[in-house]
Image (cartoon, rainbow, N blue to C red):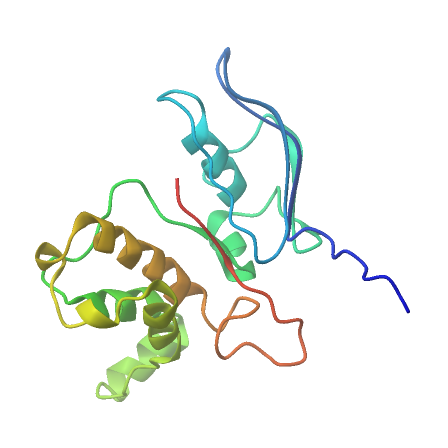
Length: 195
C-alpha cells in the first residue's frame, strides 16, 4: 500500500512584507493554503488585513516576499493576470449595479470584453450570453432564491455573497475547476479572496 502524498499548496506565501513609506503594514508573513481549505484573516482595524489581500491579488506591490499560486510565481503579475490564473478578490464595500438584478450583476462580471467580442456585439447584438459561469456562481454561492431580485431588496450578507459570486463568475472558464475549463488540466477550485 502506498501512503498518500500531500499535494503542494495552491497558494504559497513566504516572507510577505508590505510597507507604506516607513510604516510596516504586513511583516514577514508565511502562509500556505491547500486546495479545498478555507482560511479566515482576522484582526483589528489597521492590522494589515486589506494590505495583505491587496498584495496577494496584485493591487499593492509588496516590499519583500514571494507569492506562488498553483506552482507559479505571480509576484510580478498585474491583478487581471492573477485573476485569469484563478486568484481573484472581492472588496470590502459591496459595489453592485443597483438597477440590475442579481443575475444581471453576475452576467456583467462574467463577460470578458476583447476587441473581437466588441466587434461581434456590434454585428450580432442579440447574441445570447454564456451563462455557464453565472449559473455556476449562483450554485456555489447559494443565490438561487435571489437571482431575480435587485440588490436593494436583499440583505447585506446576500449582497456580499453576490460580490463573491461576481468574482467567481469572472473566473469561470479561465480558472481551474470552473465550468468550461479545459479537461486536460488539473481540476482545481478557483481562489476568491474577500477581505
